[in-house]
Image (cartoon, rainbow, N blue to C red; front, side, top):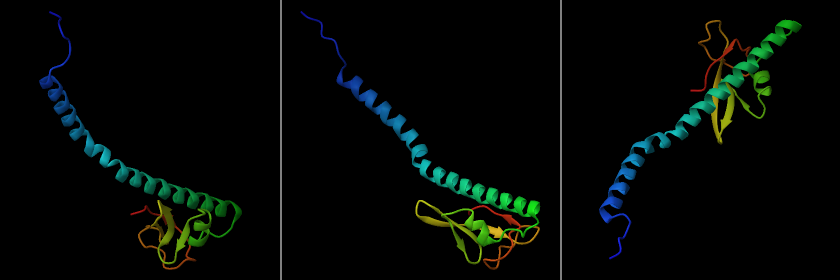
Amino acid sequence: MKMQKGFTLIELIVVIVILGILAATAMPKFIDMSADALVASKAGMSGAVKSTQSILSANAYLTGGAQPTVTTLAAGMTPEGVAAATGVTVVIDGTNYIVPTYTDAACTTPTAAVGNTVACVGSIP
């Protein structure tokens, strides 16, 4: 009589159940990755706007020119646009987000108009 080698049906079912449990515990992490990616994109764009504002402010200081306005700040961020009342509009995956710009020293009051001088830049909400 020959000895047959292989797995029994019970062993195969146990392995499939274990793999199912492992997949169920890992799935929530993979589902939240898109939300994490959006947060990272927003943070990156906020950083880019802040960096642009710093460069324009330093240039104005060195050359004796005017501090940047919301319009000049947005122009440095092409192809992003300008939101008339609150700051620079950036586009992430086809959705518009506002990076607020501020006029006061405490950086708490958003700009009231496009031409306002930018004192500091906030983060995308």
